[in-house]
Image (tube, rainbow, N blue to C red; front, top):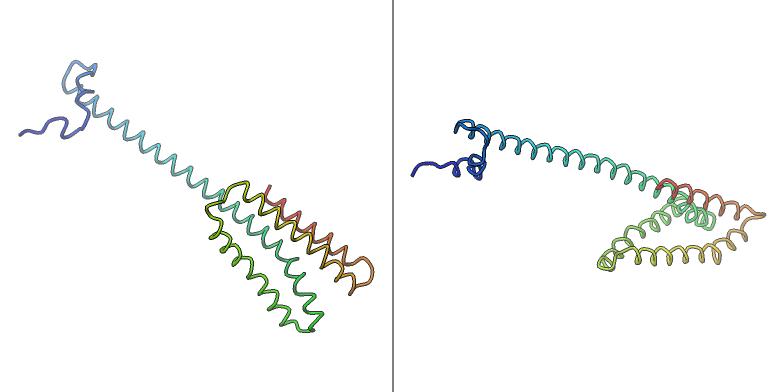
Length: 178
């Protein structure tokens, strides 16, 4: 059996048959150049898609870095809020550090457990409910427990100033995401 055009060029024979060139060699050249242009188009598409992926990766990297910075800024007043009362109660910086460290470990552990339990339910509504509940719990603890305790051990309005400064740091860290 001899090789046919279909064996070598795939679907090119129909291009050869409808070619405008009067000579068979011209028809083959025209069909082959069409294949080459098609291949170049595919290569250009791939390059564009690759460039888009690179830009997307760069943008995601920047957003993740901003998220990391926001979390780090948020964790500073949180760590201080945990360690200062422990230091004043025990007089031990080591104890204050380790208790603060232990409370910081609860966040990633809680995130993993929450993800495992709620991964099938994740959507905008679920996130809104969870963030609202967590925010409400944090405000309740601040108003009901932390502020009265801080005022009891401090004269004046320093506890309130600290609360306002902490809220400002949190607000600034949230603005980093905009």
